[in-house]
Length: 191
Image (tube, rainbow, N blue to C red):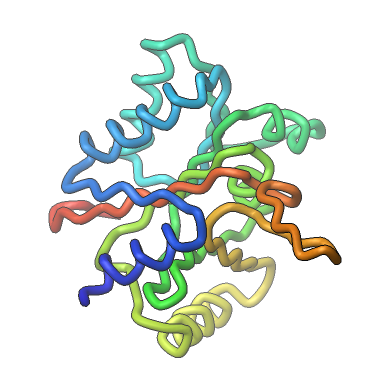
């Protein structure tokens, strides 16, 4: 089974949703469908490739949606991002075996965009999928060596979940209750 199929099986098994996109327009269509389904009036973005960010800007302008985009600044930043219905972030790589999106950031704003809104959409290129945690560890080690201070890696495997003592699983208590992965499958994507 190829990495994209393995990732999809694991991510959907963790209650996430996967959208395969052969080009930027298809990626935008997948994102627009989530925005419409959530009736989002406010979204936040971080670390996205510029061709996709441009499409999101145009979509938001056309549909009167407020867009919070980088650089994220201000003393009330957590409150502003928390008000977003959807957070959309660029993902460094994914782990096929566990269906995990690995977000690497050097600022808190990116982590807020992926963890505060009720819905998170992570965008990753298919060529950035690795097979298992052993391969992921090598990628993480490189990321931390390249930027020794202030680097944070967030591992996202579907929606946030927690279980209580009665073994009742609840989604969305400590983060997004709805998680989507947009996998860029086309070879021409840059960034």
